[in-house]
Each structure stands twice: as structure tokens, then as C-alpha cells.
Length: 339
Image (tube, rainbow, N blue to C red; front, side, top):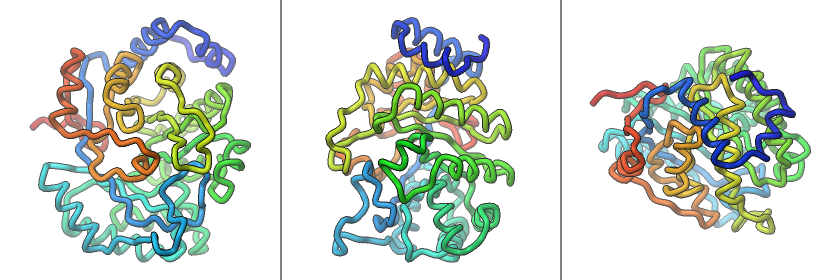
């Protein structure tokens, strides 16, 4: 299949949903000719809700002083111990832009985790990296190199929409598109893989979704550093954008399929049970997705918007098996783990 340009990619939104699904599934088979669907056992730990960004799309940051929290190292380590006890391998630490936290705090935390546990730290968003860089007066490369030497293994996407017009409306205090791309490029340059994401339903147009995908594709051409792409829909309830309508499941499946078709250089596409629910996530496995993401113990940020789907290992396996696919546990590099 030839690479699509912007106009061709935009035109896919007008295609019949089932035809689009078939094209996307064929694109998946280029990377994954078998019927394995992978997943990881992981834990989300949101260590603070103190965030100076105050994004309109976020329901989690503390509006009142009395609601603020910062987890202790002991509490974070206790939660990781619980993950390891059930065979988990990946930890996602997320906390937002907390002005009280220094580079040394993060380094001490990561070192403490690595001393005690053999887990993969897939943690800190590009926004957090830029925030720490500005706070410490150090370059992005210096920050990432220091964090990597302390135990940080990879970065999650947290891209929202890579369109500055939208970003200025929904998160004016956070990084802009070029800064996000730069963090990812620098991370890739020092041997740190990352994932890329897209949150849609944030007032962006279909054209802007495609522009987002093309920016990621262009950087991937240059670095080959993205291991996966995760598209998911914005949940407006309890946010500063509560007037917006929730993106439909049909729109989600179309956008997922188009992501698989356009991103012809990224091997893995996630199906989003956290925001879409297990039923739509299962259907997404026929629209280009090959990975179900993680169990996500302790996910709390999206729960604040009123969405709360639950997942455990047995349910994950059943969802995959019941649609004729083969469940396969993976590590954070997307290698299948043979138990």
C-alpha cells in the first residue's frame, strides 16, 4: 500500500466504516501477520495532583489547597510491590507540573524504585520534562540523560492534539507542538524509546487530526523511536470543556483505523479499553489495533471524568480470546513473554 498524503488521509473519513476497517486490518498484518493481541501488566501511579498547568481538559488537578496530595516514596514503593506480587512489569508514574518537585526528587525516586524492583519505568510526560528543564535551567538532553541514568526507561506520549491553535485554547500553560516533538526527538537520540498518543474530541477538526498523525510519522521517519501509537477520545465530564460532546464510538473506530493506515512506520497501535470500554476495544482489534495496552491498576485521572471501566488479567484474556484472537503478554519493548 502506498503512503498517503494529507489530502488522501483526510478523505478516509468519508469511507464506509467496514471498508476502512478492512484496509486498516490489512495494514496491521504488515507488522503482525498472526492473530496475537498483546498486553502488559502494569500500574499507573499518580503521585501528585498539584499541577500549575491547570488544563481545561483535565478533571484531576487540585482546585483547592486542601485537596492537594503528594505521595511519599514509601507509598509509591508499596504500590509497586503490589504490582510485582501479581507478576507486573511496568510502572507509569504521572504527576503533572508540580513546582515543588526538583530533578533530584525524581532521580531519587527512580533510583529507589530500581534498587528494589525489576520493573520498567514508562513515566513522565514531555510536558513534565520541559517543566523540569525550565525549572532547573538545563537542556532537555541533560534532563533526559540524568533521568535515564537514574532509572527512567521510556516516555509516554501525552500529546493531546499537536495543533497549537487548539493547545492555546485548552492548555495554554503547557508545551506547544514543536516542544513536544523536540522532547521525543531528543529522547530517541539518547536511545530512549517512547510512545505517541492522540486525544481527540478537543475541538480539533478532522484535518488537524491528520496533521497530528503526519507530524508523528515524519519524526518516526527520522528517528524510529516510537514503539506504539495510542489514540483515545476526550472525556469532557467534570472538566473545563464539559460543554463538548463525547466522541462517538463510530468516530473512534474510524480515527483508530485511519491512524493505523497513515502511521505506516509505527509497529503497534493500541485499542483503548480505558476510555472506550471493553466492547469497543474488542471491536477495535478488527480496525487496525494489535495491542490492548495494560491492566492499568490504579488509573485515577480518567476516572475523575466519570469514566470507570475495570480490567483484570482474566478479563483481558477473555476479551481477546472471545473474538478469535490469541492473547499474548508482552514486555515494555513489545516482546512477547513466554511464561
